[in-house]
Length: 171
Image (cartoon, rainbow, N blue to C red):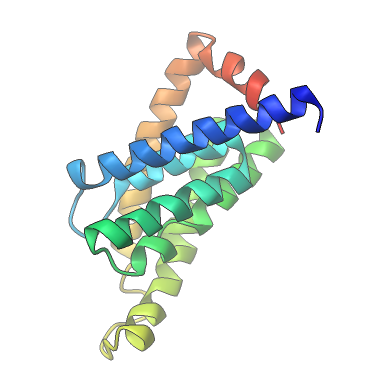
């Protein structure tokens, strides 16, 4: 493996580790019952800085940590892993920060919410759960977290920090 490629992998893995740690620490501090806005904040940041697959890994690792050490159920996974892929792909395709936020809202707020109902119904045995039960909370959580990430990324962009970070992390 060439040195430049190896250095890029090390840098992206380091940023991934930092975002996972940040997401895990912020999760219980800034939590709204039924929502995890800081997860969505981290998802958008990871999607923009690292791309779709590293952001997927970031979301999955945070979800697994939350499940293991905080006793969160499988909604930590279903409500976290789809949005970062959409966010990363949309950002990669358009180069627009708002596209990353929309990808997170669509992927997690809608698709993640829709798959969470059957998970709770069939895996956890809640027969009265409807397929749309999680739409309101997931949508609101992704809008809150995505908006905060968008504001931070805009501030980074205005100060030239975002372009500096992107030049080191480009896939």
